[in-house]
Amino acid sequence: MSSTSSSKGRLKTIAVTPKHVRDKNICSTLTDDLREQYRRRSIRVIKGDTVRVMRGEYTGIEGKIEKVNTIRGTLSIEGVQREKVRGGNVKVQIHSSNVRVSGLNLDDKYRQDRVRGEDQGQDAENDTSMTMDSNDKNSDKKEKNLNIGSTLKKGSHVKKGPSKKNNNNKAKKNPIKNKTSKNNDDNNKSELKNQSNAEKGG
Image 1 (tube, helix red, strand yellow):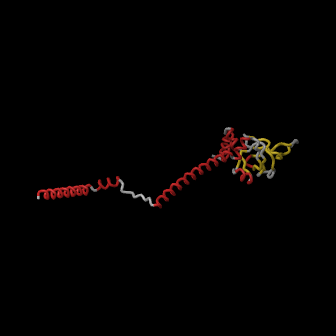
Image 2 (cartoon, rainbow, N blue to C red):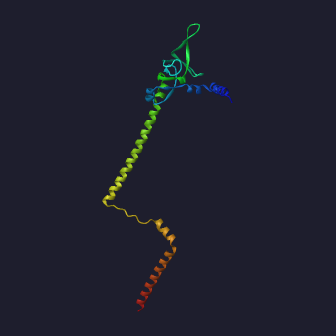
């Protein structure tokens, strides 16, 4: 498969993609200041954003976006134009990947919320509340442990006897010993009875 056919297939897939997917692909990188401020690397470009051309013949020119072509992914920028042969000026289309955003248009409230990250702030508040709850639980456990320690120091030691389960297990493990001990007890009792009977008879 030749390179021309593969490039044609790629261009065809770009043209066939739905509009909502093409809109997401019209992104440009942010300047270092905006990256630190909004904690994101790139953003969807809209009309009214201020951008600077980073590649091509018009490198270094900065201006506001006047129009966004979602089909081709190109931008019409103030100051980026050329003269026609027959006279007059025409806007030059610059691809969104060749510009860097230096100023954001935050007139749209939805975009303003998305960029400033109010959802992230709510998540952070939820995280802090969860950590506070866990800290409270840990402090309660520590207090209980301290109370138990203080009572033990005062002299209220609790002696733990062998559990019933252990006794049952021992009895199950050594049935012969238990039988011999019972036989010995019976013999001792019978000897005591014989002695008492002998004393009475004498």
